[in-house]
Length: 381
Image (tube, rainbow, N blue to C red):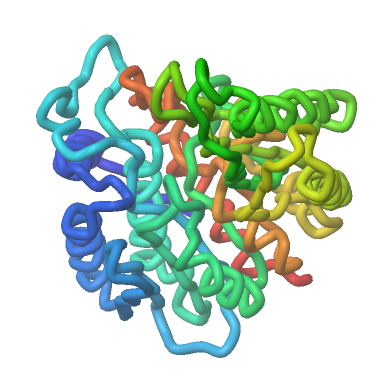
């Protein structure tokens, strides 16, 4: 199969356009501009684009297909939003320094958006997709709110697909991703009794003191051997140094492979709420699992071996990484669909001011993606 070349200069011009659009998840207008661009690109191929508006607080999500089908030979996932607030693109717009491209969202996941389009465009032009059914799903609520509104549609599409390929970036060392931790987010709120710290201290019930017991107990449940981590990332409470605080809040992040660990932690929190350390305080917990674990099944392992062989044929050297970060591939894998992640170009520094794309990986990773798609659409499962 002869793969059509990719014009890197044009790719970078389009990437510059995308990066210089603020598209934080909470800005529906910004992600709508990204969606408009991607809609035009796919419609230029004659593909159908269906816009989903799952919630007024986020931008549109795009379901893109080359034909109407009950089942798809491949589902391709990527996201159009970033974590960076409005104004970031103006403060540090797209730039190229020493072979790296920089800018908000350059590798997470705007380069992946473009690479996916160009790979499918190339395969379309050589007739590889003529009798195949492909679905591309691009969401706008990946960052910050863990695909809260779009995840059900991702799962639905995955159940109708032979396999899923995710266009998140390859790791900084070039590795692809075959496994990811699940994510849980919990919000703890403690109510106590306010009192003057000097006059009526004994009448108060210190909400901060109670939540401190929660913090120590939960942090202590981190188990590196089982790769389960708990992190209290935010805490607040009180109104004045001279008042016993009657309110305290904490936010908990859990990363896990084994869901049973989360069940145990939830039971622990129920116990803490039922028997407070500070009598007279009450606690409420909201939240739950936002992303399931992405665990490889036998078909995923088979596909990993195939991609290794494709890489060798392209003289590419890469391995496989298990990641603690979140991906929409988790929803696909939880639906039982073989899922491969990290098929975008190589880069690093995601979610930071140093986020970068290795420009010399754009073409090799585009070729790897082309050949991987070409394989899976003919894959006999």
